[in-house]
Every structure is written in structure tokens, then in C-alpha cells.
Image (cartoon, rainbow, N blue to C red; front, side):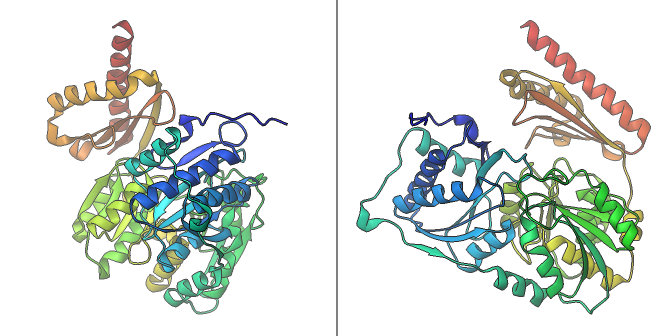
Length: 464
């Protein structure tokens, strides 16, 4: 048996979560140290309580227990909600007014991966700075373990039924009004989503509802949705919804079997929310310009934010937003929660259909469509961020600083023609060039031009 002390890899500490491959760079003792680090950091902030939950992955319960041991050893009180969806875990921390929510998950990644993400009790994701402080406590062994009389208190709690009732108080439909297909993807949403739909009286057909950590029917990333599209068409459903592995992201398929982008789904929901709510709509820098084209005439201010669920939750609170849209399928509706519980989206969409008497396909078809494409260019990790800084100066000179947004990579807005995003990958040796154009011809022209600019900068950097 291998009992040697393992060094903790700095690579598992990402900007907005912790992720690694089990028994490769993420071990139970690693998670115990992370629990100690989180507890030490919490006490520095005069916080005393954490809710812990986990997804359905094989290693999630054991890693959650290790995290809990570390927290208790630091003197933090722990409420364990066990294996459940992200929404139930976050709801529990919010309802119980705990200081921190910790959810053990690798979200959409393959089965061998795992990790943990942290939120405040209000549902705001930990920032890069906050996660960085936990990282430094762990890597530099600054954790503080208390003596036995000061160890934290432990409680098991199951608020699944309370979560379902909370949603039912806000969404209740007449029997047989709508038919939905839910693709749970053998993930954590299979533990709660169908019971929510039954309680709110929505007819629901289920795909892959049984949790299975091997994800045998499709990847936990909700992109391969052939089965969902076929089920929607076969059953004459109003729409389908596919969740990722832990239930913080969702992809919608309309009644014609077409997959909606997050931009389209978010714009449809925002149009409804703006009838009764006032405030900005948040969209990350990768989101389509259709959001501005549709919502600004309705009086909405569109605020662009960096990529990442943390910015979605943080800015939604700070700006009192009506809605937050992440291009990857995270959504925040602050009138419900600040955290990104994907369960809200199919419920809200069904409500819109009942209210308007229209089909999802009709709502989609009245939105403008703009062609969009992305190319990945290889670039050394040591160079990619410096190249972005160099390109920022060059493009600001060429297009004007007011048209070059540098909050997360470089987004160059080209008025009616479209926009370009040049962004270094946080996880791979790549620079990504994303282009959206008013027409296919404009999009192709912009892609060729800006890929050429980036490739030229990469070549020059190699010569220096």
C-alpha cells in the first residue's frame, strides 16, 4: 500500500474552482487539507459555518467526507446535505443562512475528474482572489487545526422536499398544459428534477434519469443531444432540457428539435422578465450581439462581463441585474436565486409558453440570427497572455480604445458588422479567436483578418 506523503499539486487550483483527476493529482488527503484551508480562511473572515454537498460521481462522497473532516478539524461547523444536485445544495446553504457553500463536483468533466467549488451563503461564487487565498493557505501549509474541544459541530440535513416546495410556490401549472422532455444525463439532476416537474404539474418524459457515475448514455457535458432531439419530436413535446453532471447548466431543445444557444434562451427569458422588472441584463464577452439588438430597444442596459460563473453571480448581486447569461449555459435570475441552479430555466420557459400561448420555435424564429465561428491557435502558455497585452495596444490604436474591451481577452466591437473576441485559454496552450458577423461573408472576412493578426503575432514572438 502506498503510504508516502504526497506533494499537493498547484495545478488543481483553478481561478474559480479546484479540479483534478482522482488518484493522479487529487487524493482524499488533498481534500482534507483543502477543508482545513477553507476553514482557516473562513475563520479569518469571522465565518463559522459551511454547507457541504456532492454530486453523483463515484469518488464524490469520499472526497466530501475528507473535506468535511478538514473543516471540522479547523473548528468550522458543517451541515452535510449529502449526494444531491447543485441546486439543492446551494438552496440549503441559502435557506439555512450558512456562511459558505461547498459542493464537491467536476461538473461536466469526464468521470475520473473531481473537485470542489465554493460559494458564499448568498449564492455568490468565490472570486479568483478568494480561491487564491485558500490555495496559498494549503500550499504554504498555513492551515490551523484546533484542539479537540474546539472542533466544529456536524449535522446531516435533507432539504430536498423544502427545495421542491419552494419552487412549487413560484411555479404551478394546470394539469396537461405542457409536455417537457428532461435529459438528466445520468447526473445529479436525476435525484430531484422529475419530482420538481411532478409537483408543479408539468407532464414530463425522462431520459437517463438514473444517476450513473460512468455517464453511459452521453457525456456529462450536455452537447451530444441526439436522443433528446428525437424524444422531443417523437413525443410532440413543447421543448426539451438537458442538464450537465451537477445541474448548474442547461441546454434547451425547441419543439422542432433544434438546440438553442444560451444567447437565444437567455434573450427569450429576458424579454419576459423585462415586462415586470427593471435592471441590467448581464452577458459574458462570448455572448451574441443578438442580446443587444433585441433587448436594448426594450429599455434594457446590457452589461458585458468576463467568462465564468463567478462573475455571473457576483455582478448579478452588485448590479441588481434582471438576468445573467453565460455562453456555456449558466443562467442567473436574481428574483429567484443568485446561484446558477439550472432547474429554474425549464420552469421559467414553460411559464412563458403558458403566458404567451406560443411555441419555443416561434419565439426563436423571431430573433435575429448572426453567424458565429471560433478557431483555436496554438500558443505557448508562457507567451499567450503577454501576446494578448501586445495585441491590446495594437488594436486599440487601430480601432480606438473605446471599441476594444479588455476585461477578459480582447473584444473588438465593429458596430453593425459584428465583433471579434481574442482570448487566451485558461487551461490549454491556445489563443481562441471567436467571430460573429452580420452575414456569413462578413464573418468569414473578419475571421481571416484576425486569425492572420494573431498568427503573425505568434510567429514574431517565436523569433524574439
